[in-house]
Length: 254
Image (tube, rainbow, N blue to C red; front, side, top):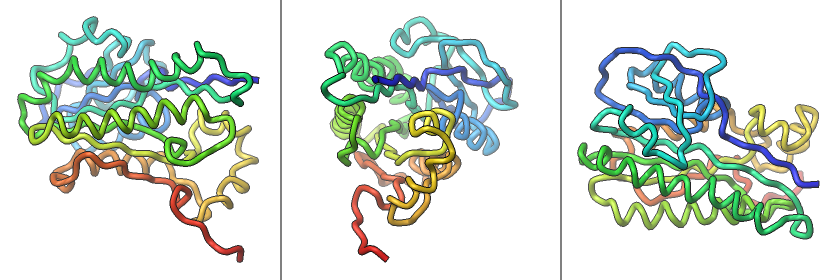
């Protein structure tokens, strides 16, 4: 059976007329990692613009919500300020299933929402990002891009393509805009738990990781925030894995 999980959810923010030095556009930030990023960077004083296709369900005290589909940025571009310092792209549909059940349409849908939509939104925002001459873009990938996992053919292919796009984009946009990727392992979000069958599976999954734990949404959000910050001013074209060692370490049984 093929399961569908989408990051395209409601972004829960309400308008706040506060001028700040950093303008941060977050796409796909209603729940989980994206929502944590809204709260964290909003608390830090950034001016947040959050984009989603649906009305917000529970408001946040930070930022401005914009209704829009990232596949059609022309429909909301005028609602964004002239200059944007940071762009975080979280949307992307996850379709899980073995190769014998996947269809070409599902492979294309996964690619479209993870890669093509990232391309369209980034290209539309380039004039706003490059005007600052110190812009930053972070794409959200997955450990599945570099680790073979059962039933992950579609999302692995799409996230691998996203990482390749990001690295080439970093070369295109240097030195004015930095481009990086954060690739987490499973995080215990509503979507993540739904993918694995709920909380009861977490101890078993944690045991597969060398650090015997899963990263929290706040940890991943903090990593994204670091890559956007002045402390990462010399970092571009990188894929930063927040995966408790899963993709690179193999330990002896103990």
